[in-house]
Image (cartoon, rainbow, N blue to C red; front, side):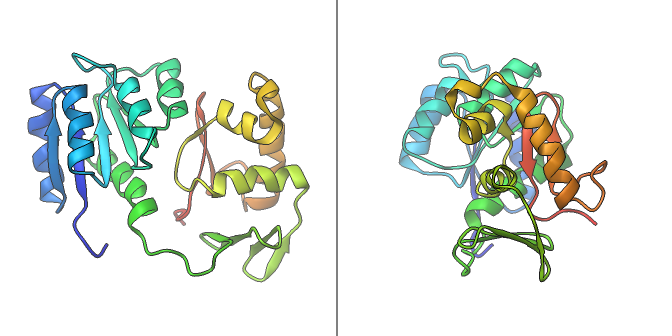
Length: 233
C-alpha cells in the first residue's frame, strides 16, 4: 500500500473500542471511532474511510440500515463485527452490501486478516490488463471468455463461466447464495439453491486441483461462496 489506510470502527461497546482501536493502530492503520449509527454515517460522509468495521447492534440505528445507507453512494469495504452469529443475520448483512462477517468473540489475527483482504480490493494498484482477473495461477479472460491455468485453457460451459466470472468480479468477497442465483439464473431462481450446488460442484472439478479441498472457490457454510485471489499453497 502506498498510503496509510483509514478505518472507521463503529461499535457502541467501550470494551470493543478499547481492544480494537489499539490493535489496528499497532498495525499502522488510522482509526476513527463511532458509537452510534448516526455518528457513523456522519463520519463516513465527512472523512470517507478506506474500510468500515461495523457492529449490527447499535443503540440508535440498526447496523444493517447503516450498511444499506452507506451502500447507496459508496463502495467502501464493510466488515461486520457482531455477536449475532445466525445464518439469517449473516445473509441479511451480506445481501445489503457487507463484504465480510466476523462473529464475536473473535481472534485478533482473524479480524486483521479479513481487513487486509477487504482492503486489497480498493488499495491495490489497478490491474493494467483490463478484462482479466488473476487467481493465483488461474486467469479469467473476460474479453475472450476463457479461463487459463498458466497457458493451458480450461474448458467451461457457458453457465460455469458465468458463475466463475461473477465471483471473479467480486474477489475475496462473500457472495450469498441468493445474490449468485439472482445473477446467474434471474430473480425467479433465488430459492433454488440446488442449481447452484450442482453447478459449483461441476466448476470445482474443472478449476480446482483437488475439488474436495478447494483453494479458489471457497464455501462460507450456509451463506455463500467467495473466490480467493491469493490461495494458500
